[in-house]
Amino acid sequence: MTQSDDPSWEELMRAANRGDQRAYARLLSAITPVVRGIVRARGGSLGAEGCEDVVQEVLLTIHLKRQSWREDAPLRPWLYAVTRHKVVDAFRARGHRITVPVDDFAEVLAAPEGPDPFEAQDMDRVIDRLEPRAAQIVRAIGIEGESAAETGVKLGMTEGAVRVALHRALKSIASLRERMIE
Amino acid sequence: MKTDDLIAALAADNTPRPTPGARMAQALPVALLLSLVALVLLWRVRPDLAAALGSAAAVKTIVPVLLTLVALWLARGMTRPEARARAQWALVAVMVLAGGLALAQGIATQGFAGLIGALDTPNLITCLVSIPVLSALPLAASFWAMKSGAPANPRLAGVAAGLLAGAGGTAIYSLHCPEDSLLFCLPAYGGTMLIVVAAGALLGPRLLRW
Image (cartoon, rainbow over all chains, first blue to last red; front, side):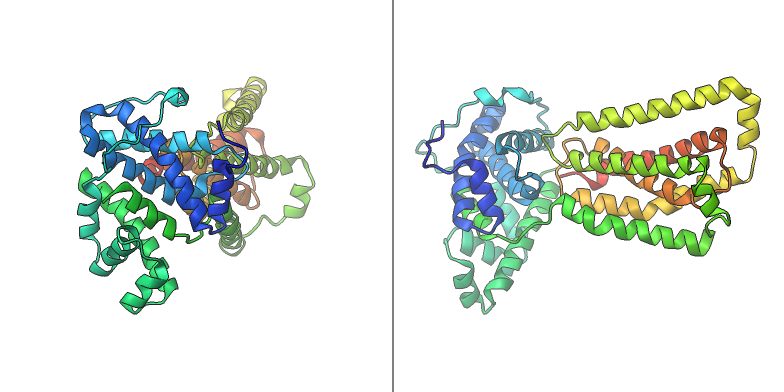
């Protein structure tokens, strides 16, 4: 499946744990279609946009819980377990009771890349609830694609302070989401 | 927000995250040490501690220490979402079973009157109160460490935290406890550990949700 010159997901995650942002972005991009495939296979009733909300929630959780992956373990079982946990949780919060069998993800195909822009609504509503500066940082780095350094210059903050603020903002997003959706 | 934008924001956050193991290594020794200091200062170790630890009575300290190590292994496994920790649970089950068999054998030889006689002492109340108190800090440390993990089952993870803290607290309390008989230690220590385990099971879903 993986070509020999392609780093494995495990290698990418290990590099990400050492602070390699490019490897991490690459890994997240690679696992997103897989997560999306699982979510859509389970939650077609939510519609494409509702599914994308759940996909984003799973990605945020993967990010905030990535330290629970042990570097000597394969990444996929961990990834499926996190996805399964979050998908069940997300559907329960939305009033859909579903069960996700543990072992059948191997057969789930990644969602095809289509014209769908994979836009989701929940995340914007949550970001609106953040402190203005935190929201500004998340949007600048995420939507406008700025680096932490550029955002820092714009806001008169050091790069380190931007990173700390971004980290806090992502954690707040996770807890705000939980409160707003339930 | 588009998913690609979210990925960009996530990738920019490369703040290192402490693993549950790292946090456990940080917090648990401190918590156990503080409980030990509290025991030495407030409860005081038994006057004949050196002699007791050199005799068969040392079992009441050694077994909780072993259980603490097994529970540490269990707690570590429970913080991984994909792990079932079957081997760890099996080991806990074997230890519980062995304790149950030892108790049954004690009752078989000395009768229920022997059991009631052994437990009919004010030391039972001291034990029931002291072990949970001495376990409180280790329990907090365990939850704090496990919170950075992703337990697939927060309640069972709470049970593991309770077992870890309860066994640690029991090992510490055993340095004070003047009772050495099997018919006291097994039911009193075991029952009190169950209180801490129950506290862990109640707190787990609240504190370890993710």
